[in-house]
Length: 447
Image (cartoon, rainbow, N blue to C red; front, top):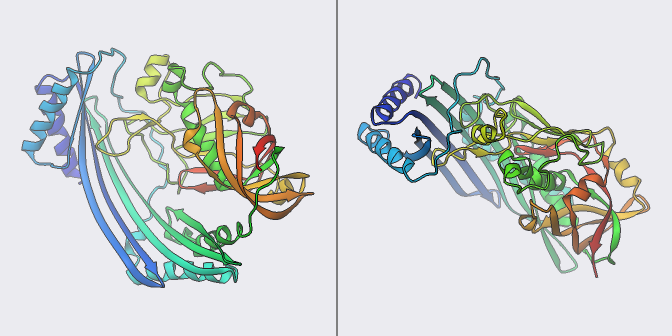
């Protein structure tokens, strides 16, 4: 869009102000996606899509109004302005609402690899087929690779407001995924594997294929175990998933409304001293990075928990104003059809210094957790959780046999305190990352 967006934005902002808005903001998103799926090493499905649209926010008499459209014609823009201002009449008055002014500095993380869109279809298909080969060769119990997929896409964003903010961001991604089927003695299990990256050269067919195969065969022959308290070792994907569940508890809006178990605990030791938890939108080549958030605030590195002590919450402009503090650059938007809300950028547990194998070797009796179910049932207010889980039994420091049909229950406040080891293998899954994490003495229900 480039120069045309500048003119479009100036026109839209001018129209909004002419129609009575005190302040106005335009947010434009243009996206492209491609996906090809292989079955039996032949193309089964291929999709390519493009989309674009604009969201308009206005502030009038302390009230916010919003409208959106995928139509960029002048007539559509006129309708959007009228609709946004009309909608503002029905929202609650909030004198703390504001749109940012231009910042002195915006970080410039590397978020785009221009070579991705230059890769030929044949090369993409070869990479997907290579993913299949790695899965098939991993273990003789892998009987079938149901599908392998390659995908990529890019997103371009422009943001402008009546305070003089004019910003542009271009980003992209690419990824591989694989679904493998393992079988033994009449039993079948499926396993999913994936790898994603900003850079095409960073994609690993080996990582995606072998992950799918490993997860397909590692649960063959699984059985329940007796209930009791025991140590758990969370593989990185599960550690990232569990830590991701509590990400909403760092929201300044949730804290203000007392909907977070972390409310009122700044400066308190809320976790074991080994845990440092970070949100950082400025990292090069990471999925959650950008120069600015969905409101035009610069992204930043925010240490949430440092050596077990709660240091900071996350804010967009609205929640920050209500808390009497500044935005942390965490006003996230899912697209042009929505307004900003507090969310994470690159949210991860800082790597420790212990090798994953050592974390396991120091466990006398426990479970290496490779899958959880029911994560959506966790209570962010109380911190209570109860997950179905499966994994591999640990006996005398050795992984022995697969376990299924167990339930892990407890409270996140206690779980964070019971962390007893953090691995050196920090791994990102999209924009969330974690290393292997060991947790001591957790209640496990079995048979």
